[in-house]
Length: 121
Image 1 (cartoon, rainbow, N blue to C red):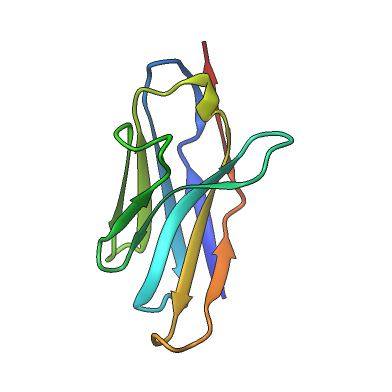
Image 2: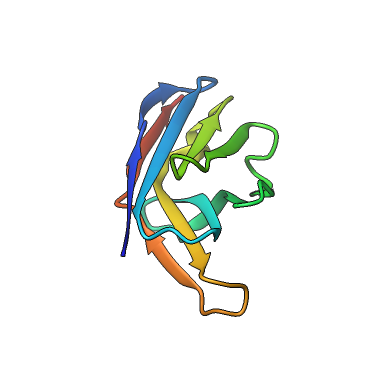
């Protein structure tokens, strides 16, 4: 069982910055990908960014160049630095982890409870 706890959400003006954190606890395998998804009311949940245990990152095109994802493997924590925020970034941000015991093992996914990010114009 894995638990993900997010923090750092809040209200910020357009052009501002916010930093999200997600701490994972429980049984964390060495082969994993941690990341952030977001969902606006009435919209589908979408991938924002993720980073695997080797440090390889992936970003949605809409946030590339503005957001930066990083992780602290010792703390099993993932961060999302969000700069140049705009109202379109508003939504509930969910932490996510995908992991495998070994490469051929079934994938397991876990989600955090979400943290609200609101960007005012």
